[in-house]
Image (cartoon, rainbow, N blue to C red; front, top):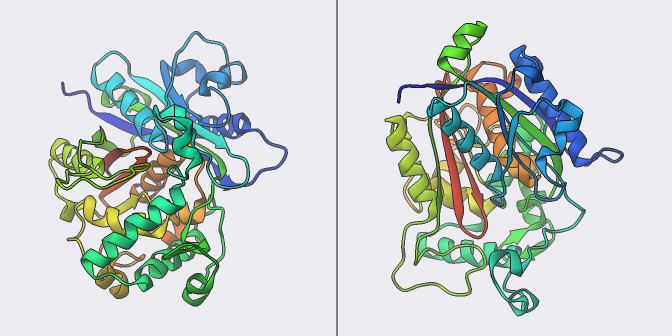
Length: 381
């Protein structure tokens, strides 16, 4: 199948807290912005995929956008919802069935930490009641072990967060728009050792949307946009150590991020060294550090050296999370993975302003969802 898929429009509602607006409002805003960016109308749309974890079904946008009979399928895949919806849209065009569609994600989470439901993961209630689903604790234990194995200090966690807030200050859609000093990050309240308050992202509110088109349709419309070279979603293998796991297997297996990234690289016919800009999951600072290696951008244990050298900062060899990632933007589950793609489209179109990565040609996204799945995309300018 030679049906190439292009992203011809993007829309995003700023992330953060928006009193007086529903999650649905944020999603509708993002869709309208994406349609305007592409210069098309809702009546032109042939299909839609979308997701929301806390704001109802995504297809609730239909009465607001227009009841046109369009195929709209709701997607739910944890924090990987956006990446999964994008993969579904990619398949819809790649198959030759459709030429033009919308991908949307939005959410409005209540204040406080995410409250995972054991039953939703097929687990008994006592599993949550005994603290086994406390993600802050799980993330802390996982990065503690990783740091001990690979000689990484707590300073690396602070450097990740410092970079995130510096980048977020340059992104109009970010929630946290002010830099935070390394000392303030390291000295902030300890949540779960070694992760302090400023090393965690917050549940947030926001919406993001993409317009996908076949190569043929894009030409017909006189439009261009980044080419979707690779898209993959993978779930956990037996023996991988993922969210909510109570113990570690002796025989370890690759993580879902490792196998999703390999699938996307193979599909795109590129290597990690070819990537110019990357957005990777940073639910907390430790996640970015581990995902740097799992996505093939360095070996285990090399992260701290790269962070100290500024390799992942703007102007570095591989800028990572150029809009501040989840740490600066917060995480509205339905929209988070799509925000990454919106950011990469802006980078590849040269529209990223003060956070622009000069000469970016290949852009990478990876979003991770509990209890163990990863979605990866590779875009080409």
